[in-house]
Image 1 (spheres, helix red, strand yellow):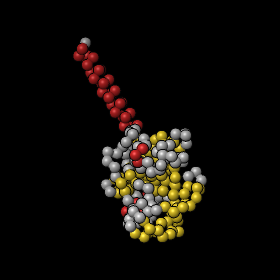
Image 2: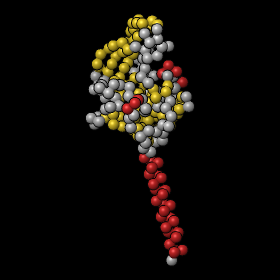
Image 3: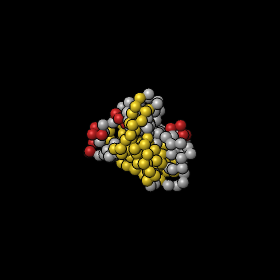
Image 4: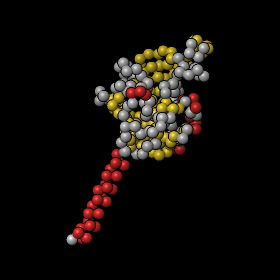
Length: 208
């Protein structure tokens, strides 16, 4: 009797293990998908080289710093999401046609940011390749916006207008650009100082 039952039990165990593995793979949910942070300099991206196959032009999404940047649109719009108000972000891949930069592979995903007030922000993007579906929880230390900010996100769009100023951090005269600032509607236009000494433009941190 023991010998006759052994193949049955073996089969049941094998099927159960396979089912668990398959289920885990299909969900592919993680709170922190990236073992090592990679920080990108937006000035290093060359839009013509980053279109990916099929000539697709999508903004780039950086899950850790929760920033989206559109290199292909005039004004180079950037979205910074408030991690104090963000619940989670999901990425559903719809194409493996993508791009590679600094050893990171980007695929085409639909990113959906779920906020604590039950609103969502959905956008087609290039995001770091991490399977067909993954989920990322916000890491507060990467927040690009102050925790007292009452908006779910801030979008900035640069304008051609600029003015001179003295950058006390860098010890030299520079120019700063005016940006249109948007959330659910236009909030206004203001100058934003450059975030690095070798450039006149500002960018949120791009960390994947």
